[in-house]
Amino acid sequence: MKDLPFFLWLAIAAGIALLGIGAHAVWSARRSRPRMAEPLPAARPAAVPDRREPSLGEAQADAAVSRAPGGDDGPVLADDTLTEPPLVATAPSPRPGARLDALVDVIVPLTLEAPVSGEIVVAHLPGSRRAGKKPMEIEGLNADTGRWEVPAHGRHYSEFQAGVLMANRLGPLNEIEYSEFVQKVQAFAEGVGAMADFPDMLEVVARARELDAFARPRDAQLSLVLRAHSVAWSVGYVQQCAARQGFVPGVVPGRLVVPGEGEGDPPVLVLSFDPQAALADDPQASAVCELQLTLDVAQTPEAAEPFPAWHRAATLLATEMDATLVDEDGVPITLHLFDGIARQLDELYRELEARDLTAGSTAARRLFS
Image 1: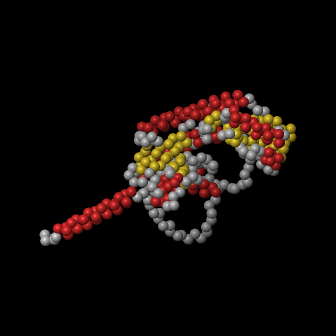
Image 2: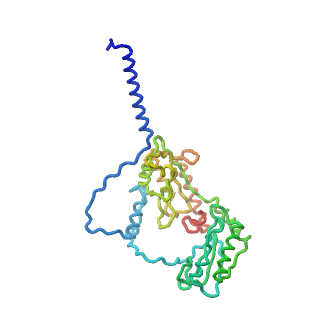
Image 3: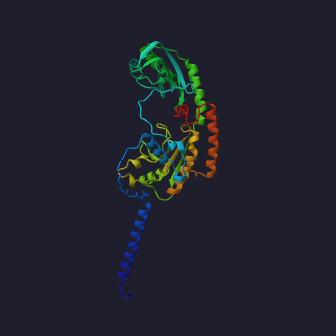
């Protein structure tokens, strides 16, 4: 070995250096690759002699159990939820009461001299159910059932009421929006032979501004960011971890939700990430570095304990995914901050109840929308 030429020593040293560089490159590539989802265990085929499809009631019970985040640590369902008899599918029935609510809507009564058919009513409904940025609606009093409902064919109506939302997250109803509402309702009234009694514009706009002044400082939408501490995540890994906390894919790419209790209810929690990662040709190779966890307070009843669910999902996801919890400004979120938010929410719930706008109620959901 001592007799080896000097150039051979140089070649050996260079080879060792190249091997070191190559090993470091492989290590770096593996370290920077997004964390992938764990492979699911293969399902074992089983013989089912008498297969039957689950009833609607059983399917809803199974969905409720699967939504409980955290496994054994998740919320406990009441016994009657699991023992509820299967629901029988029936034809849709008229709504038992009006959707319009004087707490949040300007309501205009429309009187008739004689009942009119649903065919005539439907033919004269406004083409757009909005006045500016505010939703509007026309309801009819079913002459046979005595219940308010959305006008439909094959029925007769003895009275109508039209309404427009006085405020939402886009601000209070203004003069231009109210004028558009009046024009649409007047055209409908003339078409069905009804007399409309419109309230004064100045009074309506004043009520709308007062409602908006109440709602705006109480519009609580809690949001935090889970930031990858060292290794980014693949889309599949995010979905797998989120599924363990009760999240399911939403309609919008890059959006996972914990569904509400009832059909059509807004989600309790929303976990979102870059939609471009979800839409990539190979989503599993896309790197996700941040997730946003959101709770819309007014949309969910307090009894459903949405804040504890938000807190629990954040801490469990952060632990499992090796993430740091920060606010939208990048400031770390501490346990003390969670405690402070809980106290503020309790005050908010009481203020909404005092105004008959309990969180999760139809009126509250429409106002804070």
